[in-house]
Image (cartoon, rainbow, N blue to C red):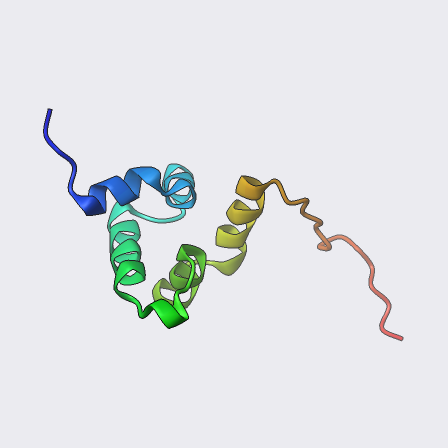
Amino acid sequence: MAELLPEEMNLEKDKLGQSLLKKNIISEDTLKRALRLKEQEDTTKKRSLAQILVSDFNIDHDSVFSEVADLYGFKKISLVHENINKG
């Protein structure tokens, strides 16, 4: 069995990345590039994978952070069909 490179180990460990891959929200290439960027960032301004995907790779914000909410068990509320009065 071949040893995994550090980049490949990160791919397998990253739950958010794996979930986004399974749902075809991102490609494996995008995930690899985003994880590489995350590792290279200055430690004083470390961003999350979600932040990097949205800001640097233009992945849909709602798709990414909806997946974050699912992974952490946050409740989601959809206001799409709600009538909000501007008062």
